[in-house]
Image (cartoon, rainbow, N blue to C red; front, side, top):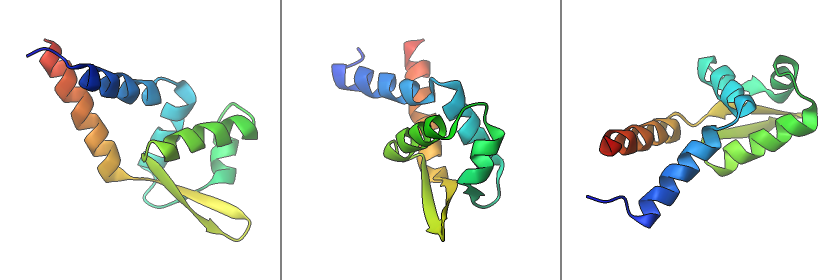
Amino acid sequence: MRLSAEAAQQFSDDLQILNHPIRMQILDILGRSAGQVCVCDLEAALPVKQPTVSHHLKLLREAGLIDCERQGLWAYYFVQREALAALRARIAGQLDALG
């Protein structure tokens, strides 16, 4: 069965959200955490400045892979494990179909 234009776009979008080392580092940090991680700790752990961290956090939130809760002045981020599992399954399924 051929890859439809819609499926190809979804596959491309899925790969694109993972296609940046900062986003991968954020997912790694959050995925290894049992709870929530303060944005201040993410900023300290990454080799880029705060605006860049915020940009990548926004993209990951828009993709539904992470979310956050505000507590006072700080935001605490966490992985949406079900969404990450669904992304993993979609990517694996498309790669298996290719070949």
